[in-house]
Image (tube, rainbow, N blue to C red):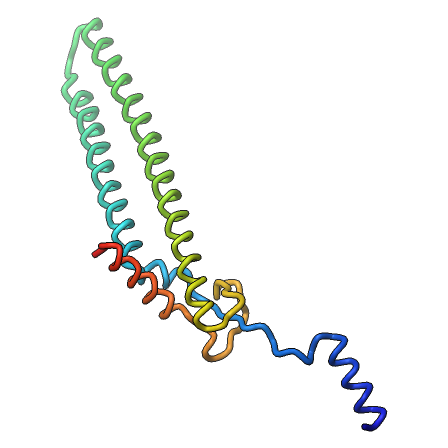
Length: 168
């Protein structure tokens, strides 16, 4: 072997270039969440809960508006009593809105954490089947070559697990 070839081989071995590159795949997490039937079901339920809370809040606001309109010309004592009721109901509405917002945020966060744990477990299974060592979120990758995206396969794995567990 020539001296140049020996030197090149030594450099390749020393820098680790003689071993095959680690297998890497990517997923589009947003597409996974949109395609996963359990995620669709969870977010639909959260949206329904949100609409119910919004309707309740609107009802409370309508009640306050009705009190404000119905005041007309009142004696001072009656006017003060009405103002106190409106102030009390406005405070209750404000508390309701803050509580409802916090409740929805907490539920969404809890559900997201659970979904991400399921995604990681399913990604592990996909990675083992494919011989992949790392799966990255494609939003954090500037470029990925053909065949590296396993989003569809991951969604299929998640939906298969969900159906097996009795999900619809």
